[in-house]
Length: 232
Length: 232
DNA sequence: TCATTTATTATTGTATGCAATTTTTGCCAT
DNA sequence: ATGGCAAAAATTGCATACAATAATAAATGA
Figure 1 (cartoon, rainbow over the protein chains, first blue to last red):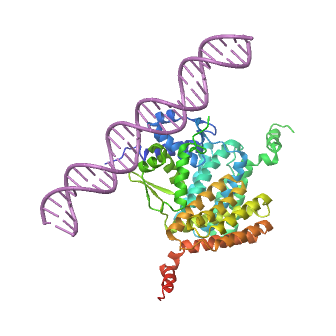
Figure 2 (cartoon, rainbow over the protein chains, first blue to last red):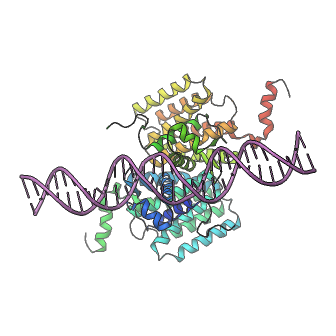
Figure 3 (spheres, rainbow over the protein chains, first blue to last red):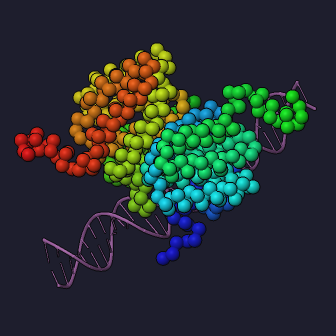
């Protein structure tokens, strides 16, 4: 009665969905990449039908754009969408922090600490580094036990990696790790106000790194590179 | 080159999706109703393939539950999910209010006023009354121009009608209309703090009507009916 | 040589067919 | 009647077939 090994929980279409999602988040598939039903199906050993189903789901999550008659591509959110997205993330993650502050169990604290350790360890690999940084937030959301909240934070975190891929400066995730540690400390202490402030600042700094250029105008971005070359 | 009349914008699967969604929100299809691919396809004049696609989308939105090998049913969120949902709604609609307060254009004010009028007019029909009450919130969200925010508020409002259908007391939407009016006034005045407070109170009262019974325990609900019958 | 048009090929949109699973029906024994 | 069991019907999961649309290559004429 054993299931096929590759069918890890829930229909095979879900497997395709997970695989593609992971590839997108890891930036193996970058924004704009074409996603032809045929080739994907062939590669994954399923028919177009199941690939299609997965693509529909991904499009509902905002990770994929479905252009009628023209095929699916990895979504390319605009800067404006990016800024809006982080605004929305802030609203939801504030709720996460408020819910969790002072209510973390020892097990949860351990899990979060361990995760932060892992983040530190993998500073080298850009791809996994970004993924782990995101997973810290989804891990927090998970602990609220609020199903809608979990779903939306997951979605927004996933889409954030698209924004980072498109507009993020290099090395953009470095300082985030210590901010995660600080946030955790405040959550443990039950200092809700400060925890919210930290989360706010944390997301702001991600936003600035990723998405602010348009407002500052391009010159600010360029100046960094200019001075690095001894110009300006 | 005219499209078929029934194909109003976007593929036919989207049409099926909209039709089912509307039916669910209007409570023509109540939580738990079976949604067989065959019958739906027959009724809508499309094949199972397209119905399936629509059902997948609906399940991603939390309106439909997809039970493997056992077919789709209209979702039956638990009381706990209901409470969580309203918590999440609050977090997002707070952002809506903060964004809009003091920034409504005359056109937007007109649109909102007109909508409130419509709500007043349709107090009689239970089904449309609920739908219009929901649409007031989605209309507000729409005006923020924040795409993620719009999507999530839409989803949560839609799912709220499921909660109402399952746990709401009769006549539960009556007082909401005046609260909408008050909120609009505060938004126009740019009184952000008070607007947030009103929205908070508004959603609280919906929550209480719909979802509190479990915390109060069932007796509180029953007592209302009991005294109406001269019992207790 | 380059623009434009026409074939050719690739890819999507949708229906349908078949195996697998679940639900229902009908039957029998208790 | 009623509980259990087997056969039948209905329903889902998935692949495939074919038409329709878009992308690409070839060919034609200036």
